[in-house]
Amino acid sequence: MLVPVIPALLAVLACSPAAPVEVRQMLSDNISTVVLVDILDDLTGAESARVEYGMDGSFDRSLDLDLSSGGLVRATLLGLKPDTDISLRVVVVENGKERFSEDQLITTGSIPSWLPALSVEVDDGQPHLDGGYLLTSIVTAPAAAVILDGDGEYVWWAEMERAHQVARVRLSNDGLGVYALPINIDGKSDRGLIFTPWAGGEQTDTDVQGAHHDFVELADGTLGLLQEDSRDVGGTRLIGDTIVEQGLDGVQTPIWNAFDDIDPALTPSGLEGGDWSHANVLVYDGTQDDWLIGMFGIRGIARVDRATGRMVSLLGSPVGDFTDPSGQTDFLDRQHVFQLLDGGIVYFENSMPEVASSRAVELSLDEEQMTAKEVWSYTPDPELYTFSLGGVDRLDSGDTVVTFSVNGRIDEVAPDGTLRWRISASLGGTFGFPEVISLPGGG
Image: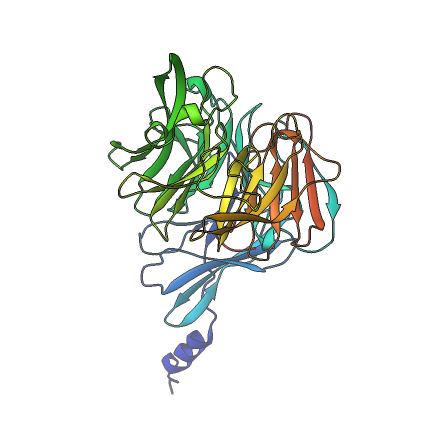
């Protein structure tokens, strides 16, 4: 008598575990803390997929994958420390059920020898950077974009070859990498706006026609840029600044020219070689659709209506619209990076050479009464003079990250002025403008 076996076999198969997801992992050839994970299975019809990963045996991070493009799916894992074991696994959801890869292990590589060494000098033992990462630059020798974690370690870097000093680095809107802009004083850089993908390798330059110091990428891909302009004023050739916008087609549109709204005769800069306004920072205020331009030379920050191209107000300078409690308008002692706050502004104050003590300052601003009042400041102990560059970033926690650029120092300061964290770079480690960011995958 034959015994039917097909039903029994089907029952066994139904209880068999699904085949593991096939994956391949590797380090980027260019940046040894970037881990690339390829999913080799056909994910057509899969509902979702993610990579769970972490350092030193943990799986405390998760990166959701984009399955919309079809074909090979690759994950790029960021924010990982050098010389560290990374555990990872891929999870694919199909028909409401999860299918896993086998657990994988890969070890990140070392940082390159050309990066300045970093040391943590103060640490209160609590998380720093609000759990995020610090995006900045090594300005020169060589110029590079870098990302540091809250332990003061490099987790990402990219050298900007042939770029004459880089101060501003920003995340690209598409989340695929970073943009960096050479300072480009006197046209010494033959590079434009430099894009570097997360895995490093080939960089792409966008021609920005001599833009300098700072840039902003708007949501639609329009670039806000600073460019120089020069005019004869009273028999002297002065160098001023303009705001221009560059579309995706490369066409530039002038928005504002400092010469049109500010009188050089009333706002001497004291800089050499006819360097008058010396703009160095550009900020976009999306709530009012305004541009704000910081001008180191005339010690002022102008707010410009993007639609009309006219200056709305000028903070600081001898002809400023805001007055401090003593009735003065010229109360910005040369400034670099600034950040708009609700009802105010925080900025890095280089100070005048005769003062030679730099600090971070917060002002409350009353735009009806046109008054400005200092409500917070931070000066390091011992004092430092950052004659060039410098920056601030106010975090959601209320802490402020203060970068003393040419001194190779970054401090994180609590609202009460307590120094919570300090990192210093070895000789040659000049930091650019700071921005605390999140990276895909959290962590």
